[in-house]
Image (cartoon, rainbow, N blue to C red; front, side):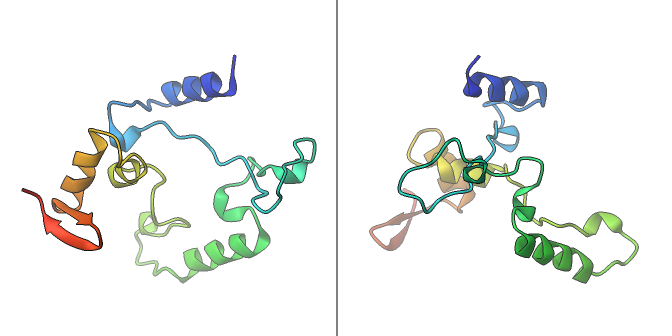
Length: 126
């Protein structure tokens, strides 16, 4: 089984589907080394630590998100406090990544109030 097949199987088990942009399949960022000209696949430092979320890959990032969480007002509604204030999969994120393919380009235009950036100018959809 390839890595792609394995991840697609996990996405299917999690209820993710290509038919719903709010539940679109996701794939983890696995690389940690974006600077090397050539990747050393035998070096563990080349890869992200998948036991930690993206916000905790470095101590500095972890501290930043913990601080954000602690600074949020706690008015009794614990659900309002969060480490990450956005979701990694939403209709606008999926449409943004796939904007050059239909039906995503149309969806992107709809989600952006039917405006399309054309050569630096915004024009209303016809």
